[in-house]
Length: 313
Length: 313
Image (cartoon, rainbow over all chains, first blue to last red; front, side):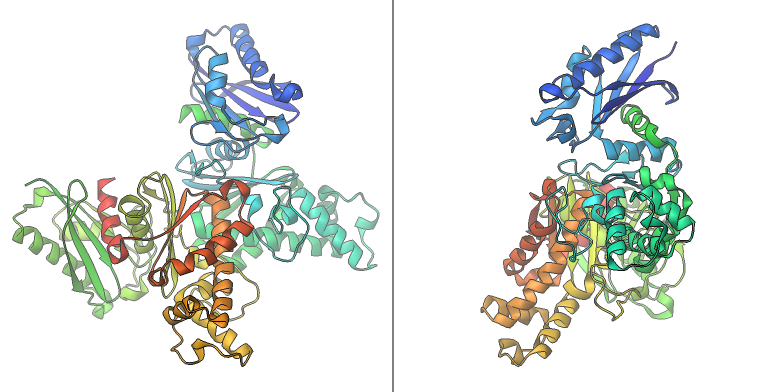
């Protein structure tokens, strides 16, 4: 029957799992709830039980499993040590790879940060396929990211490489980011950041706008941009200024072939792209000007693909 | 007699060369002038002749040479293609590795950007020794840099990774940088940038300062800081704000274990360091706060060491 790999993407409410063949083809995917009670003590045992159960149901033995890759919502270093995962209620520093491997009777486990792992998935099997130097930016409630060079995640000293959302992009905002600093990129260009920019713009004048009649979500804001709403377009320009400048800065550090824009905000479609690229071109170092910009294509499956690739690389 | 490696560091006025043994120990170093006339047509032939001559004089045959590493003042991609090198009067796009190799009768040649190669040298044999994730910043007339992960240079799509001097750090400066943009980090934190900040500060008031009696060089400015000159200290604080913020941003992208500060400005001594690190800590993502900061130790030899390592890796 061939050998298999499991890819696991752990979120605060559910865990996505995928069963892949040894060539990295997705054969089956499913999810289980994330039980965060008791400081998240059940999270890893639940995952191990689900993997064992599925392997058995599908007719695989332990020795058929090449390994299990797992993406987690927290900084994970290159050895698999996680320092903190607020969304899982984990407050201890421990080696996730070793602990999950023990629960799986010694099966190889490779762990990474969820945003980095999703970036690896897109770089490998999604819109970054074929490119050597890839940066992915995930625009959701916050901003996550990942830097993939030659098919490998740049992890950094403490697993915090690719924390693109926490680039300091403005001295003008006093309000604190979740990270404790202020002026972080995610305070302007995440879904939450877009809502902040929108509310500032609405408060600044009495100008009529579709947005005075719509809920103040990032999705509605982009719909208003598509409809030609002047106020919404000004918000889009501000979003683009912050994000385009941030990505231009990143280009001077790692000079990617391609930027992949993912996460909920990217689901609003190609309408978001020129606001990013026009501003990128304004500030980027000339030799980085030709980087490609695309939207992610794997959606919520990026994490399990990347987790599979952690094992196959 | 063992095998050898040549490390070459090409500058606009002179070419530094080093002969290393196969363990990377520097056995001999020398330099030759850079002849930039005729669109720099002599640069590579002069280097090849000097290498052949030295190998012969030291009693080595062609087959004793493992390879030649070379750092060049321009963007060099991972295949050895250089796009432009203004200081060498090179205006054509060509493969430096292949051309120098042909001049050396087929000896292996590996080429890289000079700032990246110097960073590799410091990471390997200088103050970055033993660290996995290293960022070096060279503060000279401009600002160069290099990102070294696991002993290898991050080159990027067009050889422009590590172009740290061209991070967009301020919207407030209209004056153009050499690169054509404005608000680049090197306009504030290079030796030239420090002089700009100093002259702004001197023009802003009649306040007495040592700097009103000294030449306006970065070196004199740091001497005045050591002497406790209030105006010079304000300039140092501005320098630190821009550079510290820039390095904090870089930390969110690649999360280094260590930052190495090199170049002429770093020769002013440890006086420069707290201005950088205090500002770094203000803006850095918490998980990157413990990065080490050190000054470079190899000085002008960083380039030949890094060039040697290009071959040995």
